[in-house]
Image 1 (cartoon, rainbow, N blue to C red):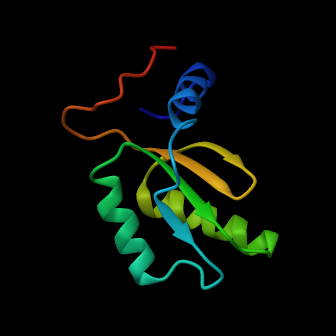
Image 2 (cartoon, rainbow, N blue to C red):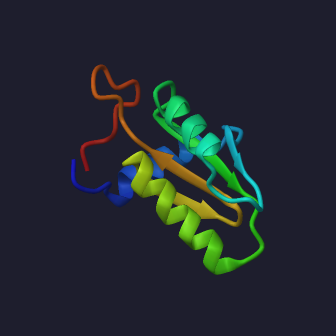
Length: 100
């Protein structure tokens, strides 16, 4: 899959609405411990909410980009300090996306 369609993103946003952030990132940014936690969490969940508590906009954007690159996930949405990403399981995906 190359990219998510707008319809697929809308569907994933609906699913993510009731989720609580699983990974929290504070002022210290992306440490090895946070990346390790993110990696293990992505093995259990296809859809994740991540809370980024960083005041500097540029640093926040940098962290968002690193998360997406590291996790090899699709960006679903960013609202304020919350990032929603999606990475389907390689075998037996639990979330079945609409075709278009």
